[in-house]
Image (tube, rainbow, N blue to C red; front, side, top):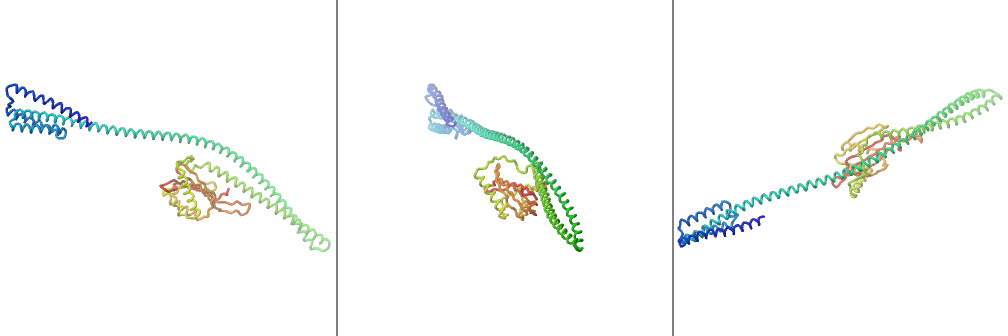
Length: 442
């Protein structure tokens, strides 16, 4: 744009100079033809020089010195030359140079004004171009945002479809669980019938035992009579002794049978009660588990973690578990984030006590639990979204079985931890405790 403006200015300068030269030569030619013989009066030259000076001053006011330097310098040079010609009494030359200086000054004035306007126009154009560039950038940014939102919408639709499929799968599983519950109900019904049969057999055994007890009482009375007879003399005494020995033998046999029947009845009664207890515990546990809200966040089985991240997370889980097993509680606690939240659930005889605990309370409870001896039953790991999950099951014996007919009771502690990456480390941000107190180790 600037180069085009300069070319136009030079073309106009050349045209203007040519035109002004012809305009100057015409009056001079007429003057020569008028019989003046080339003599010019000094006032005429002075007037022309004054006009040239005024024209140069006007050009200077519009900054022709920098905006039209060639024409301005030419005007000054011609003015100085006119003054010299006037001094040397060359009137024609002085008048011509003065007019040339005026023409150059006017050209410089006009070109300076045009250049100034052109510069303003260029500035406006540049400003508009900058605005256009800014709008294009904003438009590009908006297009990128729209594209990103479209991708997010597509991803949301994909997730929605996956969730819909997951819901359908869960509905199918729920239906299957309903069938399983029916099957369990039938099993419980069968067990109840078996229990009734066992109790009936136990009652019959008790009746038999009472019958044997009656027989023993009769034998005891006969023995007492026989003992009295043995105190008498003669044959009757010997016969009584023999009968007494026979009665004692029968009593020993009856006592042995009574003891066996009693033991058998006790075993049947204990076995029946044990089976009834286990059935009730299983039924109550299933009913309780089905009625409670889910503690763990929903699991979709999808993850955004890389293979390296998953390996690092599982390694951190194993170190966390190993620190607990080795009794290094400080190392164990170092894996918890400061803002960790824990859900603690204690279940006793199908009654639940839930509470949320913060980091400080969690440390206190862990130290209390560490005071007991826990046996590691199993440890599983999963991956969900941006977390790796560890499920550690522990147990400890709280009531040993007194004999083979008694039931040993345990405290079962299930710990589900959610761990995610924080910088270069892996920290636990959520933990769920389920503590089942005094339950069979099924």
